[in-house]
Length: 221
Image (cartoon, rainbow, N blue to C red; front, side):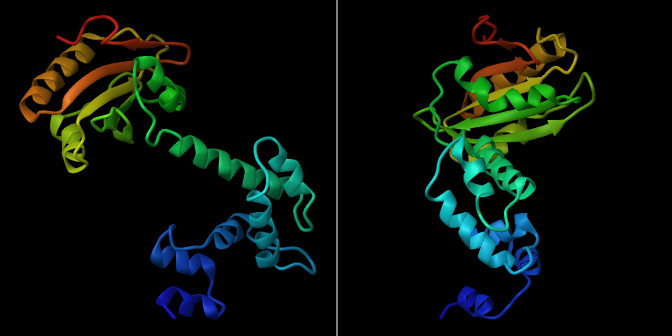
């Protein structure tokens, strides 16, 4: 019997165990228990969670909410909470191993940042096949400015053995045309990329309705 089985053989508080060991510690059933919070009269949260997990393995897409609502102990609120958690996870991790051929391939994975009220500067790391390794926020600035340094961008890329990167940021103002500072930042990153040996493939600026690609506008020189 390993450590995890010993811990779960009793009746530990899932929240306490998760706080102690991290969010990757709970089983699928226990993750659902954390989302549900409580069961209903005559049905423990564990029994409801078990039924939810079994259902999730048998349905797809738009059927999920209605199938969850049909379960004993699951109403509209809890069914929507489970469906929302699934969708959030899909959006957050849907980029993994996606192959990037053009700027348009990047936009679906960063579109959510276009709605942010402050500038978010992102770095997308890619392997030799231009598959996405990770999308991470480098810095968060003000309404119209964010400050980045090459070491903040390339340090993680080096640790991941990335072959290339794409940097992105949003313009909350609604105009995705690059500023003089954006152009200067791109030139600085290009110089650093040549020295480090990790290619800078593009710098993409997004707003709510459109995007600007330095590559498409021949500004990567």
